[in-house]
Image (cartoon, rainbow, N blue to C red; front, side):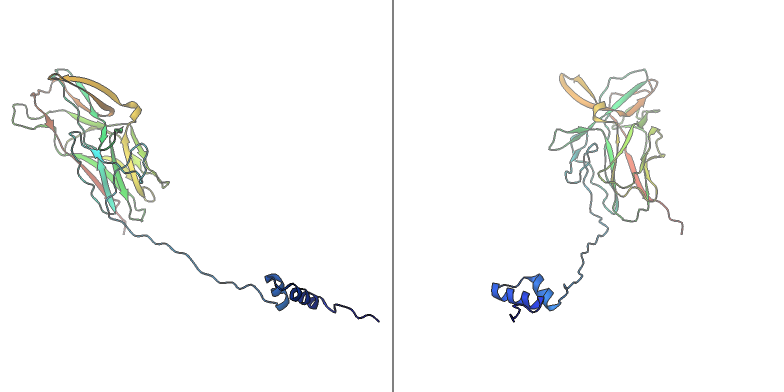
Length: 268
């Protein structure tokens, strides 16, 4: 009787692996009955409330990776942002140009926003950042501290009846959180606060901008004063109305705007 060469499947596998000089992982596991070992580890990331100032960004194409350096209308640096976990990062200053004295009602446009180190010109804007991480909501208001007043002592030292307006507000951001709501400011009353933007609870996290108008709406006006010709971009959305009946001296008139950002009160 011939003897069988292989008496069982495991013995055959063993013989083949020995003869081949190599053992595969699957074959070894099959032979020894070893189960794959499994072990859990984890990944983590944490965040904290940042009170570092947030730089201004393009109010039409906001990108925090491309900060900008806005310029005040007189070519100087603007005031720095407030910093803190709920901050006003920037607000445009408004220059309504140089005009001849008129005895009819006039509406003057504000210069558009210019920047250092770039030829970019955009609408004027205000930028707010909420990095508290609470989604508690907030309110932004503006107050004209006083009526436009002459910068030096003259007979007519105040533009009585002059009224500033911020229209066509557009809310923009680079994030996908729920947006705050922007509000028009019509005929701002000196000494009174007017609502500019508000975020209800659950809204307004991150950086948000309200700009007034679009770049496509800007007016470019050429003027010649004392033999010097300049072309200046103006926005239709930021205006100053001055009654013709208001007497004026041939000087500059100026006011200051106070931007007020506050969180929503809690009901404890």
